[in-house]
Image 1 (tube, rainbow, N blue to C red):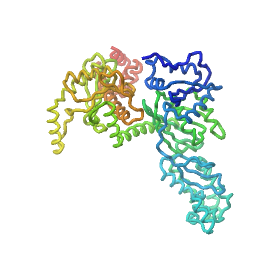
Image 2: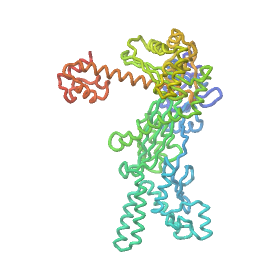
Image 3: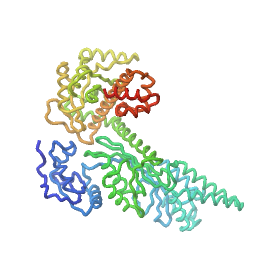
Image 4: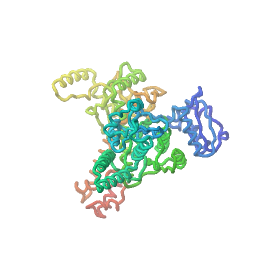
Length: 627
Protein backbone atom coordinates (compact mmCIF):
# COMPACT_ATOMS: atom_id res chain seq x y z
CA UNK A 1 0.00 0.00 0.00
CA UNK A 2 1.28 3.47 -0.89
CA UNK A 3 2.50 5.62 1.97
CA UNK A 4 0.06 8.42 1.16
CA UNK A 5 -2.04 9.84 -1.69
CA UNK A 6 -0.69 11.57 -4.76
CA UNK A 7 -2.54 14.84 -4.25
CA UNK A 8 -0.97 15.54 -0.88
CA UNK A 9 0.11 19.20 -0.76
CA UNK A 10 3.55 20.16 0.46
CA UNK A 11 3.65 20.97 4.16
CA UNK A 12 4.97 24.47 3.49
CA UNK A 13 1.99 25.23 1.23
CA UNK A 14 -0.56 24.74 4.00
CA UNK A 15 -1.00 27.80 6.24
CA UNK A 16 -0.97 27.55 10.01
CA UNK A 17 -3.95 29.90 10.35
CA UNK A 18 -7.51 28.89 11.31
CA UNK A 19 -9.66 27.86 8.38
CA UNK A 20 -12.00 25.41 6.71
CA UNK A 21 -10.95 22.65 4.33
CA UNK A 22 -12.80 20.59 1.70
CA UNK A 23 -11.95 17.21 0.21
CA UNK A 24 -13.27 16.72 -3.36
CA UNK A 25 -13.48 13.66 -5.60
CA UNK A 26 -12.46 13.47 -9.26
CA UNK A 27 -15.81 14.95 -10.38
CA UNK A 28 -15.49 17.94 -8.06
CA UNK A 29 -18.08 16.76 -5.55
CA UNK A 30 -17.34 17.84 -1.99
CA UNK A 31 -16.79 14.71 0.12
CA UNK A 32 -15.94 16.21 3.48
CA UNK A 33 -15.86 19.63 5.15
CA UNK A 34 -13.90 20.30 8.32
CA UNK A 35 -12.51 23.21 10.32
CA UNK A 36 -9.22 23.61 12.14
CA UNK A 37 -7.42 25.97 14.49
CA UNK A 38 -4.31 25.26 12.44
CA UNK A 39 -4.90 24.01 8.89
CA UNK A 40 -1.37 22.63 8.58
CA UNK A 41 -1.61 20.63 11.78
CA UNK A 42 -5.05 19.21 11.02
CA UNK A 43 -4.46 18.30 7.37
CA UNK A 44 -1.17 16.58 8.17
CA UNK A 45 -3.23 14.00 10.08
CA UNK A 46 -5.04 13.01 6.88
CA UNK A 47 -1.80 12.59 4.94
CA UNK A 48 -0.08 10.29 7.40
CA UNK A 49 0.91 6.81 6.08
CA UNK A 50 -2.30 5.15 4.90
CA UNK A 51 -1.91 2.04 7.03
CA UNK A 52 -1.92 4.20 10.18
CA UNK A 53 -5.22 5.90 9.37
CA UNK A 54 -8.57 4.80 10.73
CA UNK A 55 -10.40 2.66 8.19
CA UNK A 56 -13.11 5.22 7.51
CA UNK A 57 -10.64 8.10 7.28
CA UNK A 58 -8.51 6.05 4.89
CA UNK A 59 -11.53 5.36 2.70
CA UNK A 60 -12.39 9.07 2.55
CA UNK A 61 -8.82 10.07 1.72
CA UNK A 62 -8.60 7.43 -1.02
CA UNK A 63 -11.99 8.47 -2.44
CA UNK A 64 -10.86 12.10 -2.73
CA UNK A 65 -8.79 13.52 -5.57
CA UNK A 66 -7.94 16.94 -4.15
CA UNK A 67 -8.09 19.09 -1.06
CA UNK A 68 -8.57 22.83 -0.79
CA UNK A 69 -8.81 25.26 2.11
CA UNK A 70 -10.01 28.75 2.99
CA UNK A 71 -8.26 30.83 5.65
CA UNK A 72 -10.47 32.84 8.04
CA UNK A 73 -9.77 35.35 10.77
CA UNK A 74 -10.50 33.23 13.84
CA UNK A 75 -12.00 30.00 15.11
CA UNK A 76 -15.49 31.47 15.35
CA UNK A 77 -15.49 32.39 11.65
CA UNK A 78 -14.25 28.85 10.89
CA UNK A 79 -17.19 27.41 12.80
CA UNK A 80 -19.68 29.57 10.90
CA UNK A 81 -18.15 28.80 7.50
CA UNK A 82 -18.01 25.06 8.22
CA UNK A 83 -21.70 25.05 9.15
CA UNK A 84 -22.61 27.01 6.00
CA UNK A 85 -20.68 24.68 3.68
CA UNK A 86 -22.07 21.52 5.28
CA UNK A 87 -25.59 22.83 4.65
CA UNK A 88 -24.68 23.88 1.11
CA UNK A 89 -22.77 20.83 -0.13
CA UNK A 90 -24.24 18.02 2.05
CA UNK A 91 -20.91 16.09 2.05
CA UNK A 92 -21.39 12.29 2.31
CA UNK A 93 -18.53 11.81 4.81
CA UNK A 94 -19.82 14.42 7.26
CA UNK A 95 -22.33 13.42 9.90
CA UNK A 96 -25.65 12.66 8.24
CA UNK A 97 -28.83 13.36 10.18
CA UNK A 98 -31.63 10.84 9.76
CA UNK A 99 -34.80 12.40 11.13
CA UNK A 100 -37.70 10.69 9.42
CA UNK A 101 -40.20 12.18 11.87
CA UNK A 102 -42.12 15.39 11.25
CA UNK A 103 -42.75 16.82 14.69
CA UNK A 104 -45.88 18.79 15.58
CA UNK A 105 -45.44 22.32 16.88
CA UNK A 106 -47.84 24.75 18.50
CA UNK A 107 -47.84 27.96 16.45
CA UNK A 108 -49.28 31.37 17.33
CA UNK A 109 -49.30 33.87 14.41
CA UNK A 110 -48.58 36.98 16.47
CA UNK A 111 -47.77 39.00 13.34
CA UNK A 112 -51.40 38.80 12.11
CA UNK A 113 -54.00 41.44 12.93
CA UNK A 114 -56.09 38.66 14.44
CA UNK A 115 -53.59 36.03 15.67
CA UNK A 116 -54.46 32.38 15.43
CA UNK A 117 -53.28 29.36 17.47
CA UNK A 118 -53.02 25.97 15.79
CA UNK A 119 -50.97 22.77 15.63
CA UNK A 120 -48.70 22.42 12.61
CA UNK A 121 -45.73 20.50 11.29
CA UNK A 122 -44.56 23.47 9.23
CA UNK A 123 -42.07 25.40 11.33
CA UNK A 124 -41.23 28.02 8.69
CA UNK A 125 -44.27 30.32 8.86
CA UNK A 126 -43.00 33.89 8.88
CA UNK A 127 -43.65 35.80 12.09
CA UNK A 128 -45.13 32.87 13.98
CA UNK A 129 -44.16 31.99 17.55
CA UNK A 130 -43.45 28.26 17.93
CA UNK A 131 -43.60 25.96 20.92
CA UNK A 132 -42.45 22.35 20.89
CA UNK A 133 -41.67 20.06 19.20
CA UNK A 134 -44.06 17.58 20.77
CA UNK A 135 -43.96 13.82 20.39
CA UNK A 136 -47.74 13.34 20.11
CA UNK A 137 -50.24 15.41 18.14
CA UNK A 138 -53.15 14.42 20.37
CA UNK A 139 -51.30 15.60 23.46
CA UNK A 140 -50.76 19.16 22.25
CA UNK A 141 -54.31 19.31 20.81
CA UNK A 142 -55.69 18.45 24.24
CA UNK A 143 -53.51 21.14 25.81
CA UNK A 144 -54.71 23.77 23.32
CA UNK A 145 -58.32 22.76 23.82
CA UNK A 146 -57.92 23.13 27.58
CA UNK A 147 -56.06 26.46 27.46
CA UNK A 148 -58.65 28.04 25.18
CA UNK A 149 -60.90 28.12 28.25
CA UNK A 150 -58.36 30.37 29.95
CA UNK A 151 -57.15 32.25 26.85
CA UNK A 152 -60.12 32.35 24.42
CA UNK A 153 -58.27 33.32 21.27
CA UNK A 154 -58.98 32.44 17.66
CA UNK A 155 -58.11 28.89 16.55
CA UNK A 156 -60.28 28.64 13.41
CA UNK A 157 -59.10 28.66 9.80
CA UNK A 158 -59.14 31.77 7.61
CA UNK A 159 -62.14 30.40 5.70
CA UNK A 160 -64.17 29.93 8.88
CA UNK A 161 -63.16 33.36 10.15
CA UNK A 162 -64.24 35.13 6.93
CA UNK A 163 -67.54 33.26 6.83
CA UNK A 164 -68.30 34.38 10.39
CA UNK A 165 -67.50 37.97 9.44
CA UNK A 166 -69.87 37.81 6.46
CA UNK A 167 -72.76 36.19 8.32
CA UNK A 168 -72.30 38.05 11.61
CA UNK A 169 -72.53 34.75 13.48
CA UNK A 170 -69.58 33.24 15.37
CA UNK A 171 -68.63 29.58 15.11
CA UNK A 172 -69.32 27.00 17.83
CA UNK A 173 -66.11 27.88 19.71
CA UNK A 174 -67.38 31.44 20.15
CA UNK A 175 -70.69 30.19 21.51
CA UNK A 176 -69.13 27.85 24.09
CA UNK A 177 -66.60 30.39 25.36
CA UNK A 178 -63.42 29.02 23.76
CA UNK A 179 -63.02 32.02 21.49
CA UNK A 180 -63.50 35.75 22.24
CA UNK A 181 -65.12 36.02 18.77
CA UNK A 182 -63.28 39.02 17.29
CA UNK A 183 -64.89 38.03 13.97
CA UNK A 184 -68.23 39.53 15.11
CA UNK A 185 -66.80 42.32 17.25
CA UNK A 186 -67.32 40.87 20.73
CA UNK A 187 -63.76 42.04 21.48
CA UNK A 188 -61.57 44.47 19.61
CA UNK A 189 -58.61 43.27 17.59
CA UNK A 190 -56.29 44.90 20.12
CA UNK A 191 -57.91 43.06 23.05
CA UNK A 192 -57.79 39.77 21.13
CA UNK A 193 -54.12 40.27 20.35
CA UNK A 194 -53.50 40.85 24.06
CA UNK A 195 -55.13 37.47 24.76
CA UNK A 196 -52.85 35.86 22.15
CA UNK A 197 -49.76 37.46 23.72
CA UNK A 198 -50.81 36.12 27.13
CA UNK A 199 -51.30 32.65 25.62
CA UNK A 200 -47.78 32.77 24.15
CA UNK A 201 -46.34 34.05 27.43
CA UNK A 202 -48.03 31.22 29.34
CA UNK A 203 -46.62 28.62 26.94
CA UNK A 204 -43.17 30.22 27.19
CA UNK A 205 -43.01 29.37 30.89
CA UNK A 206 -44.53 32.38 32.64
CA UNK A 207 -47.35 30.20 33.93
CA UNK A 208 -46.86 30.92 37.63
CA UNK A 209 -47.50 34.64 37.02
CA UNK A 210 -50.83 33.97 35.31
CA UNK A 211 -51.92 31.39 37.90
CA UNK A 212 -51.22 33.80 40.76
CA UNK A 213 -53.00 36.64 38.94
CA UNK A 214 -56.14 34.55 38.25
CA UNK A 215 -56.22 33.35 41.86
CA UNK A 216 -56.04 36.96 43.08
CA UNK A 217 -58.85 38.03 40.74
CA UNK A 218 -61.01 35.08 41.79
CA UNK A 219 -60.63 35.91 45.49
CA UNK A 220 -61.33 39.60 44.86
CA UNK A 221 -64.49 38.83 42.87
CA UNK A 222 -65.66 36.45 45.58
CA UNK A 223 -65.05 39.07 48.30
CA UNK A 224 -67.05 41.60 46.28
CA UNK A 225 -69.81 38.95 45.88
CA UNK A 226 -69.39 38.99 42.10
CA UNK A 227 -69.91 35.27 41.98
CA UNK A 228 -70.39 35.10 38.21
CA UNK A 229 -66.94 36.60 37.61
CA UNK A 230 -65.47 34.43 40.38
CA UNK A 231 -66.85 31.31 38.68
CA UNK A 232 -65.36 32.40 35.37
CA UNK A 233 -61.95 32.94 36.98
CA UNK A 234 -62.31 29.56 38.73
CA UNK A 235 -62.84 27.83 35.37
CA UNK A 236 -59.84 29.64 33.88
CA UNK A 237 -57.69 28.64 36.85
CA UNK A 238 -58.80 25.02 36.53
CA UNK A 239 -57.93 25.02 32.82
CA UNK A 240 -54.44 26.34 33.54
CA UNK A 241 -53.82 23.81 36.29
CA UNK A 242 -55.03 20.97 34.05
CA UNK A 243 -52.66 22.05 31.29
CA UNK A 244 -49.78 22.38 33.73
CA UNK A 245 -50.44 18.95 35.24
CA UNK A 246 -49.63 17.35 31.88
CA UNK A 247 -46.07 18.67 32.17
CA UNK A 248 -44.52 17.60 35.45
CA UNK A 249 -42.48 20.21 37.31
CA UNK A 250 -38.88 19.05 37.07
CA UNK A 251 -36.87 22.15 37.96
CA UNK A 252 -37.28 25.64 39.39
CA UNK A 253 -39.78 27.93 37.66
CA UNK A 254 -37.06 30.19 36.23
CA UNK A 255 -35.14 27.40 34.46
CA UNK A 256 -35.04 27.56 30.64
CA UNK A 257 -32.71 24.79 29.51
CA UNK A 258 -32.30 22.28 26.72
CA UNK A 259 -30.93 18.87 27.75
CA UNK A 260 -29.18 16.67 25.18
CA UNK A 261 -28.45 12.97 25.52
CA UNK A 262 -26.37 11.04 22.98
CA UNK A 263 -25.89 7.27 22.67
CA UNK A 264 -23.61 6.09 19.88
CA UNK A 265 -21.68 3.17 18.44
CA UNK A 266 -19.40 2.77 15.43
CA UNK A 267 -22.06 3.50 12.81
CA UNK A 268 -24.86 5.55 14.33
CA UNK A 269 -25.88 7.75 17.23
CA UNK A 270 -29.28 8.45 18.78
CA UNK A 271 -29.96 11.95 20.08
CA UNK A 272 -32.58 13.01 22.62
CA UNK A 273 -33.45 16.67 23.26
CA UNK A 274 -35.62 17.64 26.23
CA UNK A 275 -36.91 21.22 26.01
CA UNK A 276 -37.48 22.67 29.49
CA UNK A 277 -39.18 26.06 29.81
CA UNK A 278 -40.32 27.51 33.08
CA UNK A 279 -39.10 24.37 34.86
CA UNK A 280 -41.37 22.07 32.85
CA UNK A 281 -40.69 19.76 29.94
CA UNK A 282 -42.34 21.59 27.04
CA UNK A 283 -41.15 19.36 24.22
CA UNK A 284 -39.11 16.31 23.33
CA UNK A 285 -37.26 15.61 20.09
CA UNK A 286 -35.21 12.63 18.95
CA UNK A 287 -33.28 11.78 15.81
CA UNK A 288 -30.59 9.44 14.53
CA UNK A 289 -27.13 10.45 13.32
CA UNK A 290 -25.24 8.38 10.73
CA UNK A 291 -21.49 8.44 11.42
CA UNK A 292 -19.42 8.16 8.28
CA UNK A 293 -16.04 8.99 9.82
CA UNK A 294 -14.94 7.94 13.29
CA UNK A 295 -16.10 10.77 15.59
CA UNK A 296 -15.73 10.96 19.34
CA UNK A 297 -18.43 12.29 21.63
CA UNK A 298 -17.23 15.95 21.81
CA UNK A 299 -17.29 16.18 18.00
CA UNK A 300 -20.75 14.63 17.94
CA UNK A 301 -21.98 17.22 20.44
CA UNK A 302 -20.87 20.00 18.13
CA UNK A 303 -22.67 18.60 15.08
CA UNK A 304 -25.79 17.82 17.11
CA UNK A 305 -26.03 21.42 18.31
CA UNK A 306 -25.60 22.72 14.79
CA UNK A 307 -28.41 20.48 13.60
CA UNK A 308 -30.69 21.34 16.53
CA UNK A 309 -30.43 25.12 16.24
CA UNK A 310 -29.43 25.73 12.64
CA UNK A 311 -32.89 26.23 11.18
CA UNK A 312 -35.80 25.84 13.58
CA UNK A 313 -35.54 27.80 16.79
CA UNK A 314 -33.30 29.90 18.98
CA UNK A 315 -31.49 28.19 21.85
CA UNK A 316 -32.32 28.92 25.51
CA UNK A 317 -29.97 30.58 27.93
CA UNK A 318 -28.51 27.24 29.05
CA UNK A 319 -27.77 24.05 27.09
CA UNK A 320 -26.76 20.91 28.98
CA UNK A 321 -24.68 18.40 27.01
CA UNK A 322 -22.95 15.09 27.90
CA UNK A 323 -19.44 16.50 27.33
CA UNK A 324 -18.08 19.89 26.38
CA UNK A 325 -16.59 20.19 22.87
CA UNK A 326 -13.13 21.62 22.38
CA UNK A 327 -14.42 24.80 20.74
CA UNK A 328 -16.93 25.48 23.48
CA UNK A 329 -16.40 29.24 23.49
CA UNK A 330 -16.93 29.54 19.73
CA UNK A 331 -20.09 27.41 19.93
CA UNK A 332 -21.45 29.56 22.77
CA UNK A 333 -20.80 32.68 20.73
CA UNK A 334 -22.52 31.17 17.67
CA UNK A 335 -25.55 30.08 19.72
CA UNK A 336 -25.73 33.49 21.42
CA UNK A 337 -25.98 35.09 17.98
CA UNK A 338 -29.16 33.10 17.35
CA UNK A 339 -30.92 34.68 20.36
CA UNK A 340 -32.60 38.06 20.44
CA UNK A 341 -30.93 38.89 23.76
CA UNK A 342 -28.80 37.26 26.41
CA UNK A 343 -25.94 34.80 26.08
CA UNK A 344 -25.97 31.00 25.85
CA UNK A 345 -23.92 28.82 28.17
CA UNK A 346 -22.92 25.20 27.46
CA UNK A 347 -22.73 23.14 30.62
CA UNK A 348 -22.46 19.62 32.00
CA UNK A 349 -24.94 18.79 34.77
CA UNK A 350 -22.83 17.75 37.75
CA UNK A 351 -25.32 17.26 40.59
CA UNK A 352 -28.84 17.87 41.77
CA UNK A 353 -32.08 17.92 39.79
CA UNK A 354 -30.42 18.91 36.53
CA UNK A 355 -28.03 15.97 36.74
CA UNK A 356 -30.96 13.64 37.42
CA UNK A 357 -32.83 14.95 34.38
CA UNK A 358 -29.67 14.72 32.26
CA UNK A 359 -29.38 11.07 33.29
CA UNK A 360 -33.00 10.52 32.21
CA UNK A 361 -32.28 12.10 28.82
CA UNK A 362 -29.19 9.90 28.37
CA UNK A 363 -31.23 6.80 29.26
CA UNK A 364 -33.82 7.76 26.66
CA UNK A 365 -31.06 8.15 24.08
CA UNK A 366 -29.70 4.67 24.81
CA UNK A 367 -33.18 3.19 24.55
CA UNK A 368 -33.77 5.05 21.29
CA UNK A 369 -30.58 3.61 19.78
CA UNK A 370 -31.60 0.07 20.76
CA UNK A 371 -35.12 0.66 19.42
CA UNK A 372 -33.74 2.07 16.16
CA UNK A 373 -31.61 -1.04 15.62
CA UNK A 374 -34.39 -3.41 16.63
CA UNK A 375 -37.01 -1.82 14.40
CA UNK A 376 -34.70 -1.66 11.44
CA UNK A 377 -33.72 -5.30 11.88
CA UNK A 378 -37.32 -6.32 12.58
CA UNK A 379 -38.73 -4.93 9.35
CA UNK A 380 -39.53 -7.89 7.09
CA UNK A 381 -38.82 -6.05 3.84
CA UNK A 382 -35.52 -4.70 5.19
CA UNK A 383 -34.48 -8.14 6.47
CA UNK A 384 -35.29 -9.76 3.13
CA UNK A 385 -33.30 -7.13 1.28
CA UNK A 386 -30.41 -7.50 3.71
CA UNK A 387 -30.25 -11.28 3.24
CA UNK A 388 -30.40 -10.87 -0.55
CA UNK A 389 -27.60 -8.28 -0.46
CA UNK A 390 -25.43 -10.52 1.72
CA UNK A 391 -26.00 -13.41 -0.67
CA UNK A 392 -24.94 -11.28 -3.63
CA UNK A 393 -21.96 -9.68 -1.88
CA UNK A 394 -20.53 -13.02 -0.69
CA UNK A 395 -21.34 -14.90 -3.88
CA UNK A 396 -23.59 -17.44 -2.17
CA UNK A 397 -25.94 -19.72 -4.09
CA UNK A 398 -28.77 -19.23 -1.59
CA UNK A 399 -29.72 -16.52 0.87
CA UNK A 400 -28.20 -17.05 4.37
CA UNK A 401 -31.44 -17.96 6.15
CA UNK A 402 -29.45 -19.39 9.07
CA UNK A 403 -26.31 -17.54 10.16
CA UNK A 404 -23.99 -18.31 13.06
CA UNK A 405 -21.53 -15.77 14.40
CA UNK A 406 -18.56 -16.54 16.69
CA UNK A 407 -16.62 -14.24 18.99
CA UNK A 408 -13.78 -14.90 21.45
CA UNK A 409 -13.34 -13.06 24.75
CA UNK A 410 -10.61 -13.21 27.38
CA UNK A 411 -8.87 -11.07 29.99
CA UNK A 412 -5.13 -10.91 29.36
CA UNK A 413 -5.18 -14.48 28.10
CA UNK A 414 -7.15 -15.88 31.05
CA UNK A 415 -10.74 -17.15 31.25
CA UNK A 416 -10.88 -17.66 27.48
CA UNK A 417 -14.44 -18.17 26.26
CA UNK A 418 -16.24 -18.09 22.93
CA UNK A 419 -19.82 -17.44 21.92
CA UNK A 420 -22.05 -18.71 19.13
CA UNK A 421 -25.19 -16.72 18.26
CA UNK A 422 -27.77 -17.81 15.72
CA UNK A 423 -29.88 -15.64 13.43
CA UNK A 424 -32.66 -17.21 11.38
CA UNK A 425 -34.44 -15.15 8.72
CA UNK A 426 -32.55 -12.14 10.00
CA UNK A 427 -33.81 -12.48 13.59
CA UNK A 428 -31.97 -13.77 16.68
CA UNK A 429 -32.79 -17.25 17.99
CA UNK A 430 -31.61 -16.95 21.57
CA UNK A 431 -32.74 -20.46 22.48
CA UNK A 432 -30.04 -21.75 20.12
CA UNK A 433 -27.12 -19.66 21.41
CA UNK A 434 -24.15 -21.62 22.71
CA UNK A 435 -21.08 -20.71 24.72
CA UNK A 436 -17.71 -22.43 24.86
CA UNK A 437 -15.04 -22.55 27.54
CA UNK A 438 -11.53 -22.85 26.11
CA UNK A 439 -9.03 -24.35 28.60
CA UNK A 440 -5.87 -23.32 26.77
CA UNK A 441 -5.06 -21.34 23.64
CA UNK A 442 -2.14 -19.45 22.15
CA UNK A 443 -4.14 -16.65 20.50
CA UNK A 444 -7.54 -15.71 19.05
CA UNK A 445 -7.00 -17.68 15.85
CA UNK A 446 -6.35 -20.85 17.81
CA UNK A 447 -9.44 -20.15 19.92
CA UNK A 448 -11.56 -19.74 16.77
CA UNK A 449 -10.18 -23.03 15.42
CA UNK A 450 -10.97 -24.90 18.65
CA UNK A 451 -14.47 -23.44 18.89
CA UNK A 452 -15.44 -24.26 15.32
CA UNK A 453 -13.90 -27.73 15.53
CA UNK A 454 -16.11 -28.52 18.51
CA UNK A 455 -19.17 -27.03 16.87
CA UNK A 456 -18.60 -28.76 13.49
CA UNK A 457 -18.26 -32.13 15.19
CA UNK A 458 -22.06 -32.09 15.47
CA UNK A 459 -22.52 -31.51 11.75
CA UNK A 460 -22.96 -34.85 10.03
CA UNK A 461 -24.84 -34.38 6.77
CA UNK A 462 -26.90 -37.58 6.96
CA UNK A 463 -27.51 -37.15 10.69
CA UNK A 464 -28.59 -33.57 10.14
CA UNK A 465 -31.25 -34.60 7.66
CA UNK A 466 -32.40 -37.28 10.09
CA UNK A 467 -32.37 -34.79 12.96
CA UNK A 468 -34.40 -32.31 10.90
CA UNK A 469 -37.13 -34.89 10.35
CA UNK A 470 -37.08 -35.81 14.02
CA UNK A 471 -37.35 -32.19 15.12
CA UNK A 472 -40.23 -31.51 12.74
CA UNK A 473 -42.02 -34.41 14.39
CA UNK A 474 -41.08 -33.11 17.83
CA UNK A 475 -42.48 -29.69 16.97
CA UNK A 476 -45.82 -31.23 15.97
CA UNK A 477 -45.96 -33.19 19.23
CA UNK A 478 -44.97 -30.20 21.36
CA UNK A 479 -41.68 -31.75 22.53
CA UNK A 480 -38.48 -29.67 22.91
CA UNK A 481 -36.46 -29.38 19.71
CA UNK A 482 -32.71 -29.83 19.31
CA UNK A 483 -31.17 -27.37 16.89
CA UNK A 484 -27.42 -27.59 17.50
CA UNK A 485 -27.01 -30.06 14.61
CA UNK A 486 -28.68 -27.79 12.07
CA UNK A 487 -26.41 -26.72 9.24
CA UNK A 488 -25.93 -22.96 8.90
CA UNK A 489 -25.81 -21.30 5.50
CA UNK A 490 -23.16 -18.84 6.67
CA UNK A 491 -20.49 -18.86 9.38
CA UNK A 492 -19.29 -15.44 10.55
CA UNK A 493 -16.22 -14.93 12.72
CA UNK A 494 -15.13 -11.75 14.43
CA UNK A 495 -11.86 -10.74 12.79
CA UNK A 496 -10.03 -10.33 9.53
CA UNK A 497 -7.85 -12.57 7.37
CA UNK A 498 -6.11 -14.53 10.20
CA UNK A 499 -9.39 -15.44 11.90
CA UNK A 500 -11.03 -16.40 8.60
CA UNK A 501 -8.04 -18.60 7.73
CA UNK A 502 -8.35 -20.39 11.10
CA UNK A 503 -12.08 -20.95 10.53
CA UNK A 504 -11.42 -22.28 7.03
CA UNK A 505 -8.86 -24.71 8.44
CA UNK A 506 -11.45 -25.96 10.94
CA UNK A 507 -13.96 -26.54 8.14
CA UNK A 508 -11.41 -28.42 6.05
CA UNK A 509 -10.21 -30.58 8.97
CA UNK A 510 -13.83 -31.46 9.81
CA UNK A 511 -14.51 -32.34 6.17
CA UNK A 512 -17.50 -29.99 6.05
CA UNK A 513 -18.42 -28.40 2.72
CA UNK A 514 -21.27 -26.28 1.43
CA UNK A 515 -21.15 -23.66 4.20
CA UNK A 516 -20.15 -20.10 3.35
CA UNK A 517 -17.61 -18.34 5.56
CA UNK A 518 -16.66 -14.71 6.17
CA UNK A 519 -15.03 -12.55 8.82
CA UNK A 520 -15.99 -9.13 10.14
CA UNK A 521 -13.19 -6.61 10.57
CA UNK A 522 -12.98 -4.76 13.86
CA UNK A 523 -14.97 -1.73 12.74
CA UNK A 524 -17.60 -3.75 10.83
CA UNK A 525 -16.80 -2.11 7.53
CA UNK A 526 -14.66 -4.81 5.95
CA UNK A 527 -15.93 -8.33 5.31
CA UNK A 528 -13.18 -10.84 4.55
CA UNK A 529 -13.68 -14.02 2.53
CA UNK A 530 -11.34 -17.05 2.58
CA UNK A 531 -8.25 -16.73 0.33
CA UNK A 532 -9.15 -13.14 -0.62
CA UNK A 533 -6.59 -10.36 -0.69
CA UNK A 534 -9.24 -7.63 -0.67
CA UNK A 535 -12.26 -7.20 1.59
CA UNK A 536 -15.88 -6.84 0.56
CA UNK A 537 -17.13 -3.33 1.32
CA UNK A 538 -20.87 -3.08 1.87
CA UNK A 539 -22.58 0.32 1.45
CA UNK A 540 -22.51 2.29 4.67
CA UNK A 541 -26.28 2.66 5.03
CA UNK A 542 -27.24 -0.73 3.63
CA UNK A 543 -29.50 -3.07 5.55
CA UNK A 544 -26.95 -5.84 4.90
CA UNK A 545 -24.21 -4.05 6.84
CA UNK A 546 -26.69 -3.15 9.56
CA UNK A 547 -27.72 -6.82 9.96
CA UNK A 548 -24.11 -7.99 10.09
CA UNK A 549 -23.34 -5.32 12.67
CA UNK A 550 -26.19 -6.52 14.86
CA UNK A 551 -25.04 -10.15 14.62
CA UNK A 552 -21.50 -9.19 15.57
CA UNK A 553 -22.67 -7.01 18.49
CA UNK A 554 -24.85 -9.84 19.78
CA UNK A 555 -21.98 -12.35 19.61
CA UNK A 556 -19.69 -9.90 21.41
CA UNK A 557 -22.29 -9.23 24.11
CA UNK A 558 -22.91 -12.93 24.68
CA UNK A 559 -19.18 -13.69 24.92
CA UNK A 560 -18.48 -10.80 27.30
CA UNK A 561 -21.36 -11.84 29.57
CA UNK A 562 -20.01 -15.38 29.86
CA UNK A 563 -16.45 -14.18 30.36
CA UNK A 564 -17.49 -11.87 33.20
CA UNK A 565 -19.43 -14.71 34.80
CA UNK A 566 -16.33 -16.91 34.68
CA UNK A 567 -14.22 -14.17 36.27
CA UNK A 568 -16.78 -13.66 39.01
CA UNK A 569 -16.85 -17.38 39.75
CA UNK A 570 -13.06 -17.52 39.80
CA UNK A 571 -12.66 -14.70 42.28
CA UNK A 572 -15.44 -16.14 44.46
CA UNK A 573 -13.53 -19.41 44.63
CA UNK A 574 -10.27 -17.61 45.43
CA UNK A 575 -11.83 -15.55 48.20
CA UNK A 576 -13.54 -18.58 49.74
CA UNK A 577 -10.13 -20.20 50.29
CA UNK A 578 -9.01 -17.37 52.62
CA UNK A 579 -9.45 -18.32 56.29
CA UNK A 580 -12.21 -16.28 57.89
CA UNK A 581 -14.08 -15.60 54.64
CA UNK A 582 -17.33 -17.49 54.36
CA UNK A 583 -20.00 -17.23 51.64
CA UNK A 584 -21.80 -14.36 53.42
CA UNK A 585 -18.66 -12.17 53.66
CA UNK A 586 -17.64 -12.97 50.07
CA UNK A 587 -21.10 -11.90 48.91
CA UNK A 588 -20.87 -8.69 50.97
CA UNK A 589 -17.44 -7.84 49.49
CA UNK A 590 -18.63 -8.31 45.89
CA UNK A 591 -21.79 -6.31 46.63
CA UNK A 592 -19.75 -3.47 48.16
CA UNK A 593 -17.44 -3.04 45.15
CA UNK A 594 -20.03 -3.86 42.49
CA UNK A 595 -17.59 -5.50 40.08
CA UNK A 596 -14.53 -7.74 40.01
CA UNK A 597 -12.52 -4.99 38.31
CA UNK A 598 -13.14 -2.50 41.12
CA UNK A 599 -12.32 -5.12 43.76
CA UNK A 600 -8.99 -5.99 42.11
CA UNK A 601 -8.10 -2.30 41.88
CA UNK A 602 -8.89 -1.61 45.55
CA UNK A 603 -6.16 -1.33 48.18
CA UNK A 604 -6.25 -2.91 51.63
CA UNK A 605 -7.68 0.22 53.26
CA UNK A 606 -10.62 0.27 50.84
CA UNK A 607 -11.29 -3.45 51.41
CA UNK A 608 -11.26 -2.88 55.17
CA UNK A 609 -14.24 -0.51 54.78
CA UNK A 610 -16.48 -3.48 53.93
CA UNK A 611 -18.76 -4.43 56.80
CA UNK A 612 -17.36 -7.40 58.74
CA UNK A 613 -13.84 -7.13 57.26
CA UNK A 614 -11.03 -5.93 59.54
CA UNK A 615 -7.57 -4.65 58.66
CA UNK A 616 -5.82 -8.03 59.01
CA UNK A 617 -8.38 -9.83 56.86
CA UNK A 618 -8.34 -6.98 54.33
CA UNK A 619 -4.55 -7.35 54.01
CA UNK A 620 -4.95 -11.10 53.38
CA UNK A 621 -7.58 -10.44 50.70
CA UNK A 622 -5.38 -7.81 49.06
CA UNK A 623 -2.36 -10.12 48.95
CA UNK A 624 -4.49 -13.02 47.66
CA UNK A 625 -5.79 -10.92 44.77
CA UNK A 626 -2.24 -9.90 43.84
CA UNK A 627 -0.73 -13.39 44.03
